[in-house]
Amino acid sequence: MKNSSVTYRKNFSLIIVFLVLISVTLVIALFVSYNLTAKYVENEFASKKVDVMEQTIKPYTNLYQNKIPEITSYQGFLDSASAARYADAVFKDYSFVKKIVFYDVKVSNQKNSTIIRNNLGISINAMYQYIRQDGKVSGLRIWNTADEDEFKQMAIKLSDYVAFSDTTRGSTQDEIFKTFYDIKPDKINYSNILRREDVKNFRELRKSKNPSFFYKQNMMTFILDPYLLKIKNSHRELYQDISIQPIVYDPFDNQSGNLITEVPLSGAFSDFKLYFSSGRDYLTNEINRRFMPIGALVLLIYCFLVLVGWLIYRNLNFNIKLFKLQYDFINNFTHEFKTPVSVIKIAGSNLSGDNELSERQRKQYGRILNEEADKLNDLMNKLLSFTQLENKSIEIKKEEIDIKEFVEKYIETFRIKYPDFKINLKIRGVESFYTDPVLLGSVFQNLIENAYKYSHPNKKELIIKITHEKRNIIFSFADKGIGIQKNELDNIFKKFYRVENQYNQNGSVGLGLAFCKELVNFMDGDIIVNSKVNEGSEFIVTLPYEN
Image (cartoon, rainbow, N blue to C red; front, side, top):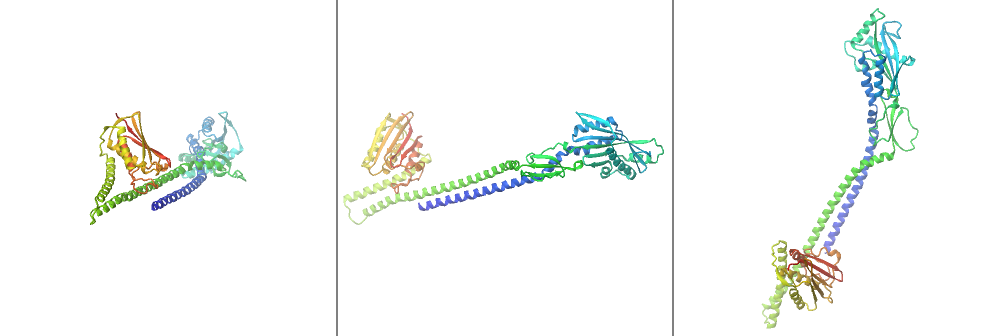
């Protein structure tokens, strides 16, 4: 028993160490995964701003790459009316365009042109300004010195392109951009792109002596307002507030402790930037949201490991208990065999010895041999019967029995065997029923034997009650013995299990009650026990009643 206790303590210590180890691992895993999640969110806070910037200036990019080049398709034949329709389409699709200035340009060889360069005269035939008010486009013919300056710069680049471009090949994108685009803060100037035939015509125009001959060219200036850009926060989980600020904007202090980042805009908005700000609580909520699945997965793995550890421990515990039961069974079974065998050997030696024995001595030794042989036979029969019950190899042979006569036969037997044993019988509502008398007798014999064995020397009493309730017959065996502890009640019907007490140190292999339960279950019945320590136990057997 001492070795078993030590083994139990070792197993318990191992499982505690295992639980502590995986618990520490769990805490470390949660801590590391949370920090990694926080770091990942912070990195995204710094990197995803480019996505927001691209989505925000996507309309501007579309205007620059697709809408503005549509002017070229008119080949210089835009007038005030068609320019107004074009401006209306721009205002509808691009809310950040505040104003459009349209230049109706005349290219000739006249000496009184606004710009005369490379023998080519470029002048403004008319200038119109378009704005959107109350959902409608209003156009006004104007003459503005600032706008005229924009025209002169574009005219100079156009004249140089006519004079120096190579008409044997197509112009590169870089040449087109430098000549026909002029991007300034909040402003885009554009003139329709010349074809190679147009360039050749303009060069011929420089040689012409007819002052009335000219070509038309269109130029436009788009005035933009960056504050009218619609900010598209495609990462609301990261950025709490986004605003458009001048590139030089830099708050002196950040008393709220918010996380901030920024990204400059491009093109005509290069003097501005997107300014991102998020409170730490705002990002903490996002960190927690992303961490929850990871934490749940870690906890799931932890629970799985705990379950595996528990199953291993339960299996080891079960094996240890099974080993203990088998060990106790072998010890007790050996003792049970050893005692009768020793007595038989002694009696046999005396009978076969040289000394003459009296008739009384021979009868005594013969009685001893018979009693010990009966003990061995009873033990072997019990083991054999138990095996047959488990294998369902016994057949129930029912016959009608008289209850009172059947029970009093066993009571009388035990009174003779144990003169100090007081057994009282109470029968109510039943006289006879059909059952297997051999199997039922085995149940009576084991329960009455246990009642005597586990009672105090001065309290050898047993009350047997038999009652008929509905479709069942109930047998109650109530003694005034030592009782059974609550933690033992679930185990006493297990094979080879013995309750450890002073009355059970020898003479038991842990088969009696297990045998009773197998017998009762085999007869489609049930057996339960109620017990209190030092007050006694009551075994209740319930069998189906057949009359």
